[in-house]
Length: 407
Ligand code: PMP
Figure 1 (cartoon, rainbow, N blue to C red):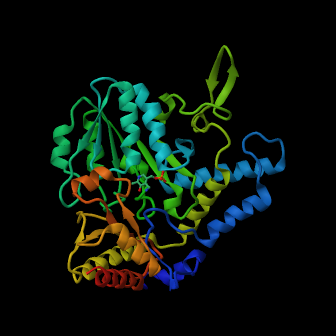
Figure 2: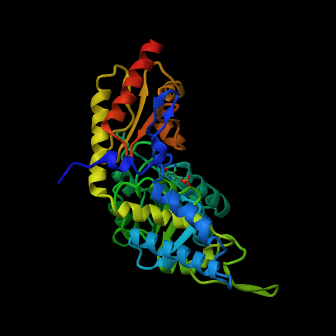
Figure 3: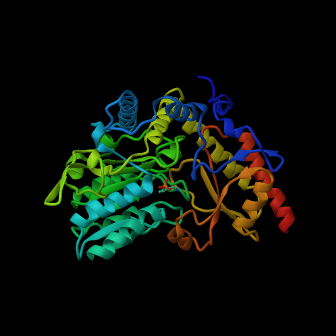
């Protein structure tokens, strides 16, 4: 079969075809957010041109159309992650809100003094801080799970931490800072064996390989639409039905109620119980458009292509004195995190930007992980299906130029 055609994909992403600081843009910040294909931009524009109305309540044609498109989007996204039912997918703003929803709603009901929430060292702050907040309120404790120098979860250490005190294991499917693909099937099995629940933070996984929540048997799965070529401000929380049914509402307001009186209020059924207020209608529609777009892409070939870009980065990095890759996980997606002797990550990021190369620098919202490696931050190039080998070369030309300037 023909090699993956990243150039053909690029043609669908208008933003990529521009100059930045006098150079053709090289966008290597996909772990922060991905760019949007024309099809997503059009879906959003068309919604506002033709169908815009509030959902689930209007007695008119536009409202019916908006509601149908919004609920069809839920079906599309639910099917994409192989949810048994669409109502198990709650719309949220993104991964951050999804984790907060579970921490507050599930956590306040199910955590108490002496209970533990296990959180690996390589988590994003979005999967650390909500647990600290709910543990602070309930008397439970957040316990970090050690990782290895390579940036993998230390499974032996994880096992020794597992006992009946552990009520939740909150772990990312893929690390945003290192690209580590965590052995979540094994983690879920072992956690369930002691009666713990597992929340997977899928922010970085969802755009890179198929996610099957039913096969994984996780209890909750959180993700953001904007990392999947969809718009910002929309994401999903998937949960097992019996858990979602038993959980109290997170936010109160319109849409999430059945009846309201000052004597007492009853709540709507799933998924609406967790969707107070006017939702991000065009966001959901845009995200479904992104998934429809991806149906036309050979995602397995895209994943191979992204890993080839990572391999090329590792190869080119070996020719740069003083460049140190941070983490070398057993399994990873196309994320290359590194530091360069004598050059602060933010200075390097600035110099790369001057050459039109967009990377992320800093702690990547993973300060405990940076502390583990004793670095203030890293430079991170994160690849998506529209990146090319030429762009990786442009990154390394930039790194060589920065080195010449600084030494
Ligand atoms: N978890 C991980 C692993 C992430 O990469 C991100 C986004 N950087 C988040 C959580 C938070 O996602 P969002 O900002 O879209 O809520």
